[in-house]
Length: 111
Image (cartoon, rainbow, N blue to C red; front, side):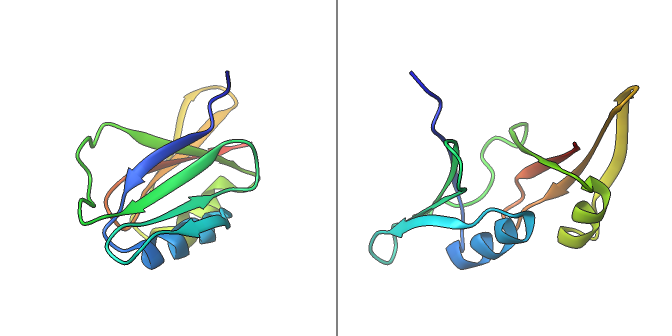
């Protein structure tokens, strides 16, 4: 068994694709009729599934999505001017928090 994707519901698929594209997630597959479009992002074995079906927005604000970056601080500043960080809970651990267009928390961890 393998973990293959995480699904989030979004209000505007193109806007979310643009946001996650700035983080480095490219569209690997997109399909569905207007009103129920789906896009899978990522080029590795684990994908982020975006579903635009009229149910967008954050139902569970305590859920976050995490990514790594060689320059987490720069990336956080580039995607959200209201970023939080750096957070350094332990020596050698540094990360930032940003919000995606629908209010989901995205954690960017320094590699």
